[in-house]
Image (cartoon, rainbow over all chains, first blue to last red; front, side, top):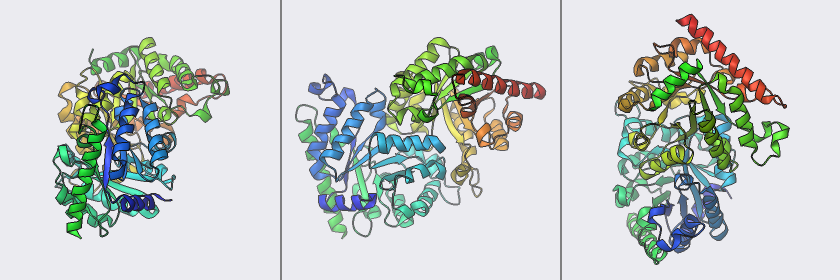
Length: 273
Length: 273
């Protein structure tokens, strides 16, 4: 099954656009997990189990594991998602970007070593940094376009340009997309620009970080970002879900937070219909 | 010792601007290494020992190790460089780029887990993706500016802009550089643009990939890229050095290739004096 078909199916069967960001910090793990042999895996596995009914995707973030040498737990986590929740999207957030044979190795890392359905990549080096990912024809390629942080303006949205960089990225990735593998990262903190991106890319799905802690407005995101089928978005939330609780009910609290977000989104998109 | 002081010292004591890219491919390893427990480490260690007399820096490339789960060998390799050749620069080529706490974890990965002197980073997300690296005040931050590949033009050198993106990256990183930690990646395949970058950044050191296989012209690189002290460059070569030989004299062949490149550079920069 190709990547877009997998996305369409999970959006509809789950009736959810929620993606849970799995960004484990050792200091914030529940005490009872800290001394287990695989604390990151155990923490994330419990979050995955608790949130799966209300979500369509999981997004483990590579740096959180790599900083402390826990790649084996990242591999185990993605393997767990693919075994237990094979219809969910397992999206590796790695933001890789390099050229030639090095790009091939990064694609291998994401799709073969970890077995991810999709991976985030950086567009700065251009098409020859993206091509090796397209060789994995059933996987998704999520290109940074308009990131949610304020300091992204200096390059992505320079006002003196004929066309802001983020718009060129959106238009160019739409041109590349004959294989139906691409998504774009479009931050919730710039909902009107999210609408511009939607205009440029048609029904291409968008990964939207930045609601919650970063201040993105969920109603504005849905107004500007939904496609004509009231889908087309992976709305990602991490800390507001995974650290919703802190004691031995952390997983239950995460499940409730994911369910709440699913409900808020569905209420708003039903209004939009 | 701060990063620039370490660079200045090794340029002068070694009389070399040569940086060896350590990009191991399993298929290209000498047969006698393929069945050792740590083939990537053993291969790179032999290259490091053979080339150290003629070089100032080593640049292991992260994806080559990560694609096949060999992070432990990458850590052992950087540890070996720092123990045996503590005055050489150990530059991790990872091209990371993310924001907030995630950027902090990528900085931790490069500087703490691996202990690298410097790491390559991507500017697309802006200053808040770079700030966490500056917290490690004795380490280098090597920002992608003008990469050596042809497809980089679409974004880095858009001609319709008031100022091409790569020039803004150069000028902006020069503004950030009050701490004396920054370098820029400037590909050998665009030597005149390398000269523009040199004008914009003064004596900021530049990492120059793209000579050899990619077709960069060494004489033009030196003409446009050297600073007023006839230094200021890390000229990186990977495959032309590490695969100069293939049988049990691979390390000796690598040493000779590094020595040849050192000689070519020094002949040309003495002419420039």
